[in-house]
Length: 86
Picture 1 (cartoon, rainbow, N blue to C red):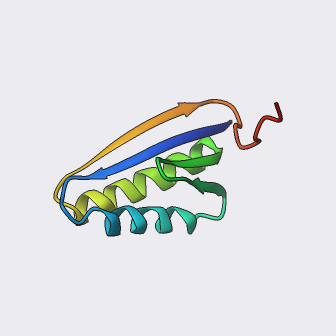
Picture 2 (cartoon, one colour):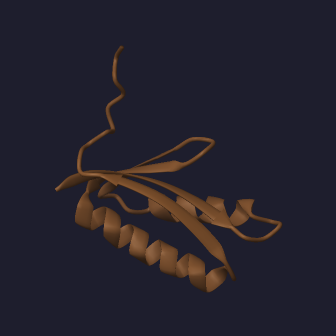
């Protein structure tokens, strides 16, 4: 099943940018999903199982490295990779 995920990471520490950048770079290593970023969030596109596998691994890794982080996620069971032309 193809799906789209929007995720935002909020490390609860003063120096938050390195943790976010590492999280995004790690997600980009999964060749079965497409990762797009902007100033507010990161979007993942692909098969549901591949996205969930990547998210499970990377969030667990992040929790081990960072004392506290908050994640906000939105899923849809559709491919929203294409930009509407209107």
